[in-house]
Image 1: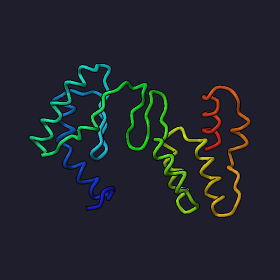
Image 2: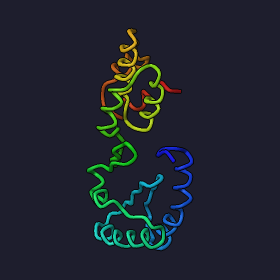
Image 3: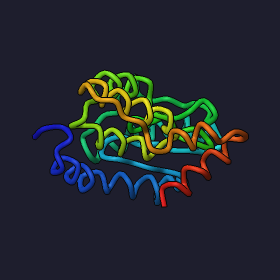
Length: 171
Protein backbone atom coordinates (compact mmCIF):
# COMPACT_ATOMS: atom_id res chain seq x y z
CA UNK A 1 0.00 0.00 0.00
CA UNK A 2 1.48 3.38 -0.98
CA UNK A 3 2.63 5.71 1.78
CA UNK A 4 0.29 8.67 2.10
CA UNK A 5 -2.65 6.66 0.76
CA UNK A 6 -5.84 7.47 2.67
CA UNK A 7 -6.28 3.78 3.48
CA UNK A 8 -2.81 3.53 5.04
CA UNK A 9 -3.63 6.56 7.24
CA UNK A 10 -6.89 4.95 8.32
CA UNK A 11 -5.19 1.63 9.12
CA UNK A 12 -2.47 3.45 11.09
CA UNK A 13 -5.14 5.19 13.16
CA UNK A 14 -6.95 1.93 13.85
CA UNK A 15 -3.76 -0.02 14.62
CA UNK A 16 -2.26 2.68 16.83
CA UNK A 17 -5.43 3.45 18.80
CA UNK A 18 -4.15 1.03 21.48
CA UNK A 19 -0.97 3.11 21.62
CA UNK A 20 -3.03 6.30 22.05
CA UNK A 21 -4.90 4.72 24.97
CA UNK A 22 -1.64 3.53 26.54
CA UNK A 23 -0.14 7.03 26.33
CA UNK A 24 -3.19 8.83 27.69
CA UNK A 25 -4.50 6.34 30.28
CA UNK A 26 -1.52 4.27 31.44
CA UNK A 27 1.26 6.85 31.20
CA UNK A 28 -1.09 9.76 32.03
CA UNK A 29 0.42 12.05 29.40
CA UNK A 30 -1.52 15.32 29.21
CA UNK A 31 -0.13 16.82 25.99
CA UNK A 32 0.11 14.23 23.22
CA UNK A 33 -0.55 14.44 19.47
CA UNK A 34 -0.22 11.78 16.79
CA UNK A 35 -0.70 11.75 13.03
CA UNK A 36 -0.37 8.25 11.55
CA UNK A 37 3.05 7.11 12.83
CA UNK A 38 4.44 10.49 13.96
CA UNK A 39 3.79 11.61 17.51
CA UNK A 40 4.80 14.35 19.90
CA UNK A 41 4.63 14.51 23.70
CA UNK A 42 5.01 17.87 25.41
CA UNK A 43 5.94 18.28 29.07
CA UNK A 44 7.80 20.77 31.23
CA UNK A 45 9.71 17.91 32.87
CA UNK A 46 12.71 16.51 30.95
CA UNK A 47 13.11 13.63 33.40
CA UNK A 48 9.49 12.57 32.84
CA UNK A 49 10.03 12.54 29.07
CA UNK A 50 13.28 10.58 29.42
CA UNK A 51 11.53 7.96 31.56
CA UNK A 52 8.75 7.59 28.99
CA UNK A 53 11.05 6.43 26.16
CA UNK A 54 11.77 2.88 27.44
CA UNK A 55 8.12 2.40 28.46
CA UNK A 56 6.94 3.43 25.01
CA UNK A 57 9.53 1.21 23.29
CA UNK A 58 8.47 -1.77 25.40
CA UNK A 59 4.76 -1.23 24.75
CA UNK A 60 5.22 -0.83 20.99
CA UNK A 61 7.42 -3.92 20.69
CA UNK A 62 5.39 -6.22 22.95
CA UNK A 63 1.88 -5.15 21.97
CA UNK A 64 2.10 -3.84 18.41
CA UNK A 65 5.34 -5.42 17.11
CA UNK A 66 6.70 -1.96 16.23
CA UNK A 67 10.00 -0.23 16.98
CA UNK A 68 10.88 3.42 17.41
CA UNK A 69 13.54 4.67 15.03
CA UNK A 70 16.53 5.43 17.32
CA UNK A 71 17.56 8.54 15.34
CA UNK A 72 14.09 10.07 15.54
CA UNK A 73 13.67 10.21 19.32
CA UNK A 74 14.39 13.81 20.26
CA UNK A 75 13.91 15.61 23.55
CA UNK A 76 14.34 19.35 23.24
CA UNK A 77 13.06 22.65 24.57
CA UNK A 78 9.87 23.96 22.99
CA UNK A 79 11.53 27.32 22.27
CA UNK A 80 13.91 25.46 19.89
CA UNK A 81 10.92 24.41 17.83
CA UNK A 82 9.32 21.03 17.20
CA UNK A 83 9.78 19.65 13.69
CA UNK A 84 6.42 17.94 13.12
CA UNK A 85 4.46 17.17 9.94
CA UNK A 86 6.38 19.54 7.67
CA UNK A 87 6.26 22.50 10.03
CA UNK A 88 8.45 23.81 12.81
CA UNK A 89 6.14 24.53 15.73
CA UNK A 90 7.28 27.24 18.10
CA UNK A 91 5.50 28.50 21.24
CA UNK A 92 3.60 31.32 19.49
CA UNK A 93 3.62 30.41 15.80
CA UNK A 94 4.38 27.79 13.10
CA UNK A 95 6.69 28.06 10.14
CA UNK A 96 7.24 25.78 7.18
CA UNK A 97 10.18 23.38 7.55
CA UNK A 98 13.20 24.67 5.58
CA UNK A 99 13.40 21.50 3.47
CA UNK A 100 9.69 21.76 2.63
CA UNK A 101 10.06 25.46 1.80
CA UNK A 102 12.95 24.79 -0.62
CA UNK A 103 11.05 21.96 -2.31
CA UNK A 104 7.96 24.18 -2.61
CA UNK A 105 9.90 27.05 -4.19
CA UNK A 106 11.50 24.63 -6.64
CA UNK A 107 8.28 22.89 -7.73
CA UNK A 108 5.56 25.56 -7.64
CA UNK A 109 3.64 26.27 -10.84
CA UNK A 110 0.10 27.38 -11.70
CA UNK A 111 -1.26 23.82 -11.54
CA UNK A 112 -0.11 23.10 -7.98
CA UNK A 113 -0.20 26.67 -6.62
CA UNK A 114 -3.49 26.25 -4.74
CA UNK A 115 -2.14 23.17 -2.95
CA UNK A 116 0.98 25.00 -1.78
CA UNK A 117 -1.03 28.05 -0.70
CA UNK A 118 -3.24 25.69 1.32
CA UNK A 119 -0.13 24.28 2.99
CA UNK A 120 0.87 27.81 3.99
CA UNK A 121 -2.56 28.55 5.49
CA UNK A 122 -1.48 26.49 8.52
CA UNK A 123 1.60 28.54 9.37
CA UNK A 124 3.05 32.02 9.31
CA UNK A 125 3.69 32.00 5.59
CA UNK A 126 2.36 35.30 4.22
CA UNK A 127 5.66 36.38 2.66
CA UNK A 128 6.23 32.93 1.21
CA UNK A 129 2.69 32.97 -0.24
CA UNK A 130 3.52 36.21 -2.05
CA UNK A 131 6.74 34.71 -3.38
CA UNK A 132 4.98 31.54 -4.57
CA UNK A 133 2.33 33.55 -6.39
CA UNK A 134 4.98 35.58 -8.21
CA UNK A 135 7.05 32.48 -9.03
CA UNK A 136 4.12 30.40 -10.29
CA UNK A 137 2.96 33.09 -12.67
CA UNK A 138 6.48 34.07 -13.73
CA UNK A 139 7.16 30.44 -14.72
CA UNK A 140 4.11 30.67 -16.95
CA UNK A 141 5.31 33.91 -18.56
CA UNK A 142 2.75 36.12 -16.82
CA UNK A 143 3.01 38.73 -14.13
CA UNK A 144 0.74 38.62 -11.13
CA UNK A 145 0.37 41.05 -8.26
CA UNK A 146 -0.76 39.45 -5.02
CA UNK A 147 -4.01 41.21 -4.12
CA UNK A 148 -2.94 41.86 -0.51
CA UNK A 149 0.60 42.92 -1.30
CA UNK A 150 0.07 46.69 -1.30
CA UNK A 151 -1.91 46.59 1.96
CA UNK A 152 0.67 44.36 3.65
CA UNK A 153 3.48 46.62 2.50
CA UNK A 154 1.58 49.64 3.86
CA UNK A 155 1.12 48.13 7.33
CA UNK A 156 3.97 49.05 9.60
CA UNK A 157 4.39 48.32 13.26
CA UNK A 158 4.15 45.18 15.36
CA UNK A 159 3.56 41.79 13.79
CA UNK A 160 0.13 41.59 15.48
CA UNK A 161 -1.04 44.54 13.35
CA UNK A 162 0.09 42.73 10.22
CA UNK A 163 -1.79 39.58 11.26
CA UNK A 164 -4.95 41.61 11.98
CA UNK A 165 -4.72 43.20 8.55
CA UNK A 166 -4.55 39.81 6.88
CA UNK A 167 -7.49 38.46 8.88
CA UNK A 168 -9.66 41.46 7.99
CA UNK A 169 -8.77 41.14 4.31
CA UNK A 170 -9.66 37.45 4.21
CA UNK A 171 -13.27 38.02 5.35
